Image (cartoon, rainbow, N blue to C red; front, top):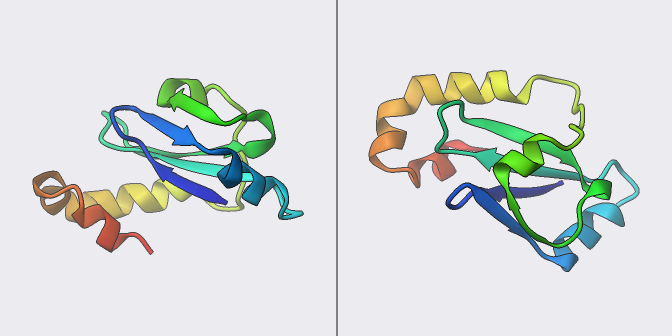
Length: 99
């Protein structure tokens, strides 16, 4: 899984990042955190449908999602709700809260 956070509503993927997930033998997944957003959430996208480049989060949201076996966004929503004031005051604090 390649994990990215959006900057200005977009992410950039390099060839080497995509090669790392597509050569793993597992379902190649790109996880992109859409935050800040009115509905902050993780987008889990099949890496086989992506080429290197810069993507708007809206573009990624339209691509096929990967099922990881549990509701990532429910767990993330709970984390946000518990710490929203701290995260809004200091967005980098989110990095410390994520495993």
